[in-house]
Amino acid sequence: MMPTLVSLNPKAAQFTSKSLKMLIGGQWVDAISGKRREIRNPADGTVITTAPDAGREDVNQAVIQARKAFEGSWSKVKPNERAKLILKLADLIEENAEEFAHLDTLDYGQPLTLTSNFAAAAADNFRYYAGWATKITGETHTSSVPGEIFNYTRREPLGVCGGIVPWNAPLMNAVMKISAPLAVGNTVVIKPSEETPISLLRLGELIQEAGFPDGVVNIVTGDGPTAGDALASHPDVDKIAFTGSTAVGRKIIENSAVNIKKVTLELGGKSAHVIFSDADYETALKNAANAVFWNSGQVCFAGSRLFVERGIYDNFVSDLAEYASKYKLGNGFDETTVIGPLISAKQQERVLHYMDIGQREGAEMLTGGKALESELQNGYFVKPTVMANVNSDMTIAREEIFGPVVSAIPFDSEEEVIRLANQTEYGLGGGICTTNLKKAHKVAHAMKTGNVWINTYNITEPNSPFGGYKQSGLGRENGAASIDAYTEVKNVWVDLN
View: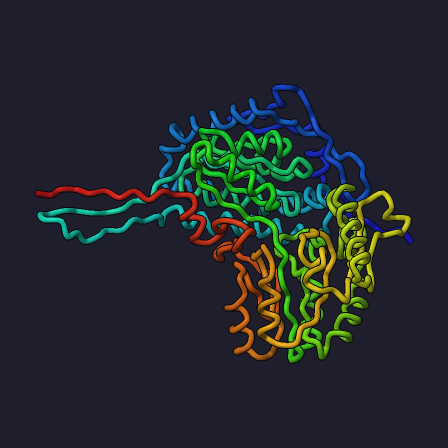
């Protein structure tokens, strides 16, 4: 029986019925080269629309316009007026929340339940940072220098801030690179993933509708090696924020050296999720699945290394496999769908390749693999996959797969699992399930990672800093950390004698 799909929101249908353009200096434009790129629906492989394929000169024009706005009209907008504009934008996102959810589901395949939450979170994020606009403060300092010296600091915006956005939550990841910079008075040039630009371009229309001056937010569409590289290496960009792979993050750092620009990187992960035998079993089972299968496993902090205390290992892993096998795969517009497709055929091939490597190295696939159902054949679907009999030396336990694949590893003691959890080049997320809070805090403090969830997983909020240790990144997004990341501190000395 074929699923009954929710009809595409009329505004979303209208927006995607046209060839999309970029927003540069308040104008909607094509790439100077005239090149365009097809945007495909990962649920069935069909072409949704096309978008400009920006080159270096397009990026340069966007930076020029952002600089012009920063030094001109935007510099004259007072903090309370910035706050009003950001709040207006948040209201517009909320008014069009269904459209944004539908655009993201169409563009990257995930269920409407998930993309609807992201649309709501996008509005909340803007509202949070609107509150910061009028609360940027400096400090006064005592001075031991002879005479009357007044010593104070002030926070000032950086200037032009670049953002490079991944495809695994396109709207939300973009908002996190726009809201804080605008709140403190910067201008923005942002590049969505070449595979998922649709919702960000629609956001550009609402930015204009909210009344932001031309050039304050510029959106360029194109691939990473060309447009992304041009943005990261541009000498007139003062800050770059990137979410993506660690390999590309290294390249961003290299490119940023041209003018020693500020850098925030949220990179890869291979997060450890620890299940102790004293955990509430059903809660732990649900958390273990949610930690790695949510968003089809396309999550940088996914709990993809599942450490289970040996006494319950066999039963827990078996039950997890049964739990995972019941997940409904399908089109995100089907209200019964729990897991959508991966973003592309390339990503599907990558994930399946890791499964093959795991089995060749001795792991056992208890459930999962490629979705073979006829109605899923044209999309990029992979079933929730549980790999058992894994050890920490195996490739699937070391490398980021970025798909719905969990590697289950047994452990015998707190000391051992702490050592194993930290035995990775990454440090973005981590989870602990136990009813012993003393143990929970001890292990959480010992884990070398930027985020730890105890008896839950996948929770983030705009007031809470997010980022990683080690090769999972530099700096933090969200919370007061973003205010620090998007401002410079100036120290002023005044001789009052």
